[in-house]
Amino acid sequence: MHANTAISPTVDAPASPGTRQVTRVVRGRPTSDGAGVKLTRVIGQPALDMLDPFLMLDEFRSDQADDYIAGFPEHPHRGFETVTYMLAGRMRHGDNQGNSGLLTAGSVQWMTAGRGILHSEMPEQEDGLMWGFQLWVNLPAKDKMTAPRYQDIAPERIPEVELAPGVSVRVIAGEAGGVKGPVEAEATAAVYLDLRLAAGASIEVPLPQGHNAFAYVFEGQARIGDGPTSDLLRGDLGVLGGGDRVRIAAPQAAARLIVVAGKPFNEPVAKYGPFVMNTQQQIVQAVEDFRAGRF
Image 1 (spheres, one colour):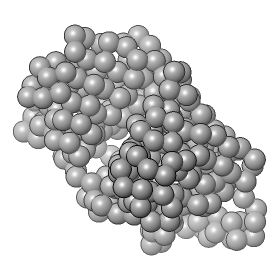
Image 2 (image 1 turned 180 degrees about the vertical axis):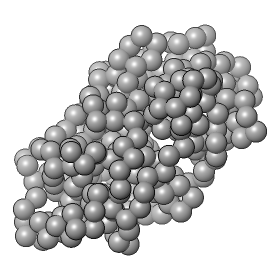
Image 3 (image 1 turned 60 degrees about the vertical axis):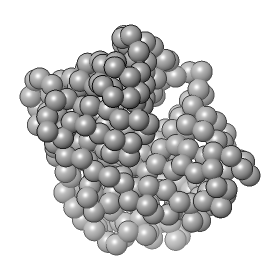
Image 4 (image 1 turned 90 degrees about the horizontal axis):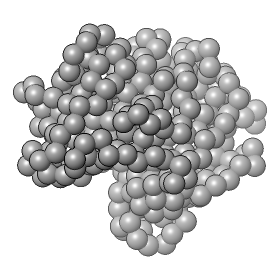
């Protein structure tokens, strides 16, 4: 578990019209979670503790079964949402409410933990590539004790559109190219895009002004904006400054990246392992409720 901490959100995107630039570049750190699953933590580490409302971003990618086979046995969550986007492999989820489902390549699960849930995420394969992302999205104080819910989105429900020659996007949440993603994320009005650019292609993507945003390159290399830190390599996360759009290009080689944006809450954040609340007292209550079987 994380140490007991109470922190204020990081705000990197003041509201201003214009093209967003990369204000800093962060590389992930190797770590493990669950029952020893090896992954790369990009948000939720010393170089970028959080980017309000985003609490954590992990990339898991391995074709070595020992790195992932133990999975994430039953564990609790309260006070935020988890977003799992599978690029390759299969993951079975289940919880103490009787819900279960299978995440396959190209699918998304947007789980609102709300007041509390116990769930597990276990690989449903014994070999082959397991690859994807898990993003933790905070909930505002007024919604932290809401009823838990799942949005399980099959691959065919995620629209894919061509934005320009050599540029396609899968729209998971928010809007791009005139199409809307299937995920409902009202609290943060989140945008979650999976962009693919051929070598030499470029695109300008509108993003809501005032949202905090980042771009994470997971294949090839990309140029985000035109500032001094605009060139991102595979494994680089670029925190985006203020503006109402972002210019993305792949001048040297093909690129694939996620672009994610959300409305910041600017509220106090208290974190302890799988619990994210606003005060230390609420964290103590979450631990007590979990131990007493009230999830």
